[in-house]
Length: 313
Picture 1 (tube, one colour):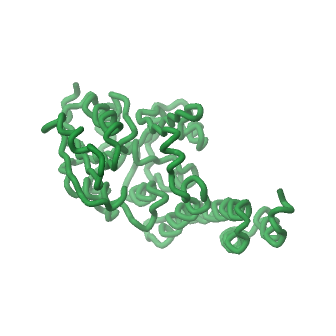
Picture 2 (cartoon, one colour):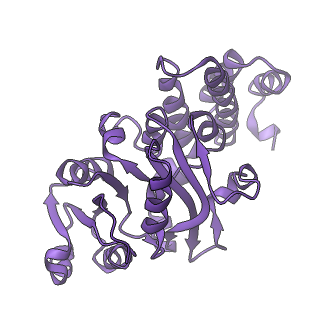
Picture 3 (tube, helix red, strand yellow):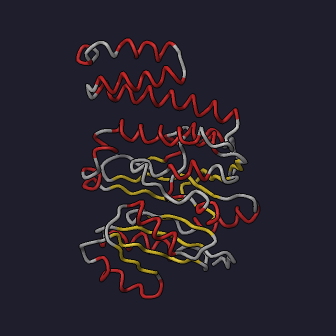
């Protein structure tokens, strides 16, 4: 057990997951550090969550509130917590026992860093296990190094979109400087990490210390935006990048990277709209892509929007 001086607050929002949230809590209790505050925000559950969590007693801080959604629950947890460092864990996910220990030890060696992130394993009952960094081609950036020190993490995160809230350990001052989670991006919760990337350096580990668990029934119940209508999630990602362009802390190189990513995601969004046969939105998206970056690929897709999608299948 590591005696870390800094208090770490772990925020666990939950809603009607009495049968799962205990796994998340147990994975925090099993962390190899001894100065951890567990804040469970029950976002209006109608099941037996409160009764189930009673067994933890003073080991956790239980907060019940009327249902406000994930963003509201996380922000409540932040406001009610006391830690110098804040971490987030969804109620159906878990951590490996040494996650916080590794993060705190590496942060101690880089005291100017405002966040430590790790890879995340995706564990699904209906598909093969994968990890975020492999899916996003992020592992090539490590080149044999145990971790990365990113003095300005914005550009790399914009290109690879590798950050996951479930793996992040963030300095409280960096979170409060961003005005917490925003309700403007309900389908892209990692938007806050873009804003945090402007607050200071990050440390990034390629090891998946966090495990994101998705059960088939939960996947089937997911909202239209993230599964049946992925173009809405793409649009949220683009909006988050767009908001960064007006920030005076973003330098010229980062601006160019953001513009390139905006064009890329506008192109991908246009293709998704075309696949859904929503041609007016497809034309709007590809026009956005052409405005950000006029190239042959964007121009060809623009011309294709004038052809009914059924003839392009």
